[in-house]
Image (cartoon, rainbow, N blue to C red; front, side, top):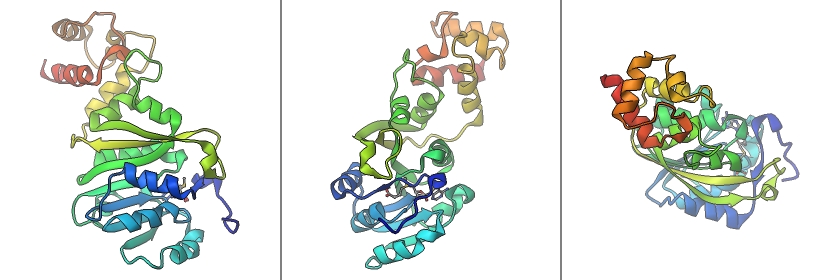
Length: 261
Ligand code: SAM
């Protein structure tokens, strides 16, 4: 990897350990029947492992200067389509046109846009089955956090609303070139096919807007206090309950009750 000038602004922390790359592919459970989207091909280490294991691979990379390295690395494969573009600039429906139907995402994500990428696909995708992605360990911990814990918040509720979440493995920072500041983990998200609802997102964001305040207080930005009190009572919840005490299912149920009342 000596020839590469790593670009920090693009979150370029590359992998090369063959055992780890194989483990990530195994974590994604892809088979030779699967079509796969990779975000951030880098120098193609994960790309070639994925190409070996799936039917078709579409891989995006923002950094055009990696083109020669990638073409060379991937020359033996005829099932890979490389696209040099910023994934955030391309509409999800246009990305989905590259696939014949259902597809899976497997990626060592650039950390400066982890959440925007995850929510782009959770909210907008029509045919996505799963995401197996490298994220910072603390982001993974937020995704699997339990109510009443400090890590439990908007990210936890929203990700679990859309998907079943599992941490597949922890990856030490030394496994990357150059090493990032913190350890990472591989997270597996199995999509539940929940439709995007802007109002549910606003509901959850508002519920957590002031963490120390009660749900009643925070939600009063959206609803009348009398209405909030009656929905809380109807759900056998204390009027002093705070957002961090509610399970994902309680969030979903409360939201429905507010809509119906
Ligand atoms: N897959 C490689 C690996 O595992 O070694 C590289 C992973 S590196 C963490 C993230 C890659 O995403 C970098 O190659 C970076 O240039 C690319 N990238 C960053 N922002 C991007 C964007 N908006 N769209 C597409 N690729 C992007």
